[in-house]
Length: 442
Image 1 (cartoon, rainbow, N blue to C red):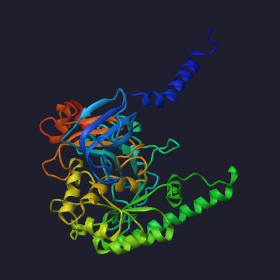
Image 2: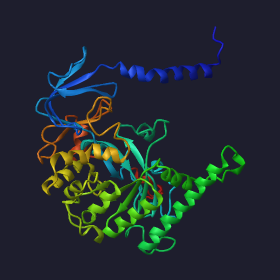
Image 3: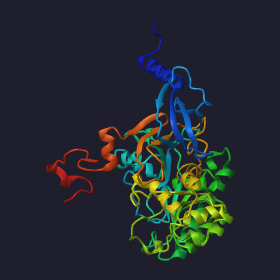
Image 4: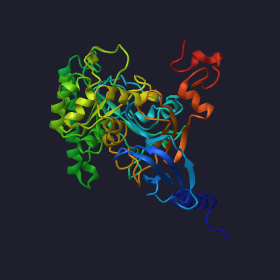
């Protein structure tokens, strides 16, 4: 006889399923990919390689004959192809993210609350071989808000896309900006000096907030009122959240380095159009750079001295760097091309590969999980029909955690890869009430 109420029985059943899920996934049949050139991003390329994945993880990778293919494995002969790690985009605006314009400091804003997982940009990103992205608010604020790190797992529920920390929380950083973007009219700063002053004042308040919490100890009556913005900045000061700082001009870059030195936070310099002018200073600060190779004319005056040699210059100086899209500044389908342009401007080929993969993963504190093809890491990888940096090469398949999420031979996926009539269309527009939608045409 059942002595538990129905609701309790359901809860117990779900708990058992949750505990069993990792074990069930681990029992999935392994898949072995053979015959491809494998670019591991952690060592030399393997001309005739074998990649074995199971339960969402990489089980083995190595040269043919040196890797034992498990009994019962599905074997896929991909001879003539290249397999590389899934691409990590350190700066994206997929999902329709924008600036919060109610004030210059918005540390309490979570970009995850405004990302639309149905946005067709996610499908285009998979067509470009992207598997992990850092989605950020815009750069119209001194402090723009919390970023979110996502895995492109093909779901319309954003919670299914989170890259979660060990405690289950979604991972992410903090977006900040200087230069011309956050400058406006009061209460926004009107000068570069005021931009830095606003950032400094917010971090001082956060430091005081954290000190009050520490002094309160276990006495809840002494805790300050909860402040979501200061709570986020306190996480930055504690090293739990990385600052992703939009900055272009060499003097603005140095301002960020001064703030980093003053408050001790971890920072990734984003864009750094003039970073090639202060590469040695960036190297001495030990700060990584997420850079963009804009491949068409136009843009803001701050980017007039952007140079494709920046990757080679930063690499020579010993700076950890990666390429990003700033989607839709660069379409996510073409991020590999940015690294190819870096090679054309003098960058070492292996360094270019790392700049799309493991370097980017390290900037997001995810280097132990993604970014290279090594046993134990997530089975995120891309299958291409040639050298990644050839203009003639196409992404054939994209895999996230051992599951294929893009297949060029699938007509639906192919539409997102190449565009054309119907690409990204969600359905017919119902004109009867079009003007009543929020933000719609009146």
